[in-house]
Length: 335
Ligand SMILES: Cc1cc2nc3c(=O)[nH]c(=O)nc-3n(C[C@H](O)[C@H](O)[C@H](O)COP(=O)(O)O)c2cc1C
Image 1: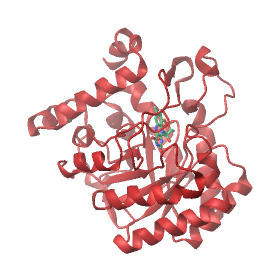
Image 2: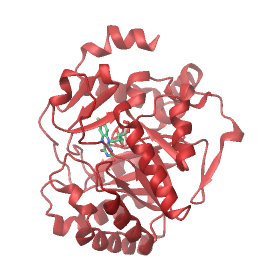
Image 3: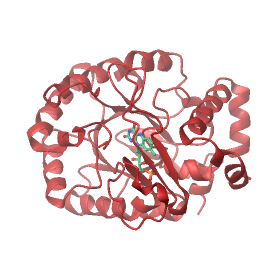
Image 4: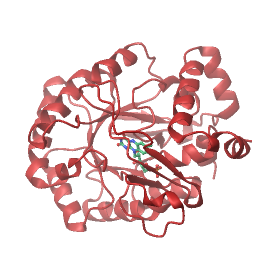
């Protein structure tokens, strides 16, 4: 049914408009127990105690979560939980509100089962997200993706990440430093040792002061092996709990869709192999000293299993959910 709805209705809407409608729908349905029951009955897999996993002392109903960027403002967590997601990464959240890049800024590449986005962290800021979270029942584990405002200089980036952490610490089960979005100018330079060491030190000391919770780093798929090695060394030095691998790519290799010329980060099927190779590389290099969340091009159970086989302890998806629709979690968990 969803492919029909997708081809006949959604595909004619601007992708960001379709996204706003989906978030509104999930917000309304998720707000009542009756609405959540309808979503669960229609779309969610049956809970299976054999699928429960414990990572960093947190119990997840299963391995599959929703990746950062879908619920940017923390508006529809109960609806997403009712669809069956095992966790949700909210954000990326910046300290202060900002509009993001001019529209259009999300593009479908259906021939490639991919999306290109250059959102640029639009949002209402950390205090507004906290106001939503204060009113939200905690049904599944929540990760908070920490970001910085566009106008904040790299030299002061740590202050932004710490401010978001300070504001949202009570509401996250774990936290991800997003230093790998290609859509905030220079952000990816925070992955270099000149900035990263100071950033990790500052955020970890804020975390310790508040109360220790797992901190992860989300990395780009466009790094060299040497750059990844450096990040892993710093991560171990600073007691980082894990790596989210990976964010969107700047590569346009092998694409067929006309929209490939748009600027921004590419996600979905073309990213699948690259992110799996990076997961395997990290696992081979550092064993289980860091927990890896595998992200990139998961559309079905085989894709999910490949990420786990490569060494991920949890997985996340975004583009697969957009293309496959509300029954996505059920489809992915079924072998
Ligand atoms: C429209 C869109 C917005 C995104 N926004 C964010 C974001 O705010 N923070 C983040 O860490 N990742 C963001 N991502 C990246 C995803 O979390 C994920 O890492 C990437 O899309 C690869 O996974 P996928 O192939 O399953 O989509 C975004 C992706 C898309 C498509």
